[in-house]
Length: 357
Image (cartoon, rainbow, N blue to C red; front, side):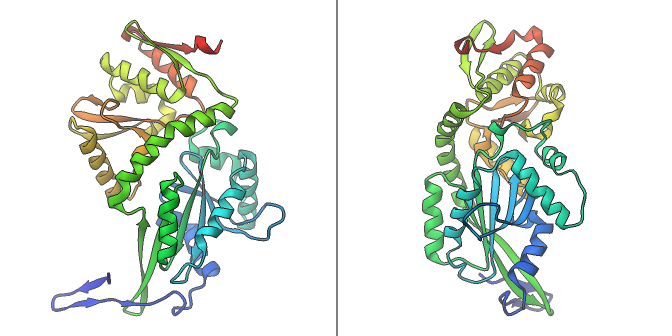
């Protein structure tokens, strides 16, 4: 679908072009520009390094390596061509190779990148600040690796492969950057073509179905396997993992009249990563649609798989509907302790599970 220019008398289609025709190179132009404005292709992510290849027996390098707010690694591969080659296979190899990266290795990679730019920023503090962490915990770092493929266009064999892999619970996104010429300048139409917006709800359901399986498997190998016994008005909810414990505690406090704003003030380090909300007392479908629409206006992504937003999980308070984040790692026990101690009159209590003793 072309892009059109409207004026008072005509509608004209912009002239399509290619990066090659405009003499824009993959590394020295596209990669250089995108590394400075990563949000153009990957909203809400932090660049760790470029041309990363710190592994043995391979001379291949990741174009751009980033992390998202949930401390997942993001492998970004760029192709200026119209067919994107075998970019999906290349990216899968890179994702597998980088999947064992530790927090300290990420700090070393970012520090080396900053030195190449002539900067002396504290790499560790930069990463911790982006993640909102006080200190690192390996159990919460790089639980998953996302892949973002960026190209002038994608052949059908690539899009078919990506859709098939995403159905098997990978997170691969295809971002098309299509250049046009207008008044001698290059305009670029940047569109995420996989997953398509109309397919997003389906993929969210798939991820929600498998999320608990991944969490259970990950918890089995973590140092922090703490579970919690939560009591709400005399009813005991034993052996809850930290995510479910947070949900039960927060819903119990809300039922006792504590507002989400009061809870956010009690755990200020979570910031806007504690709740997401929308105006009105909404059901799950309307809530997710409203939040997604609001985030799109702000240029921010919304992945409902990262929030407790099923019908029986939502919280309605003060004319708004709220969903609690299900992305909890470092400081979870401190957050639970702060919430229950701040509002003892509510009858909500929590302690490390007796089942683990």
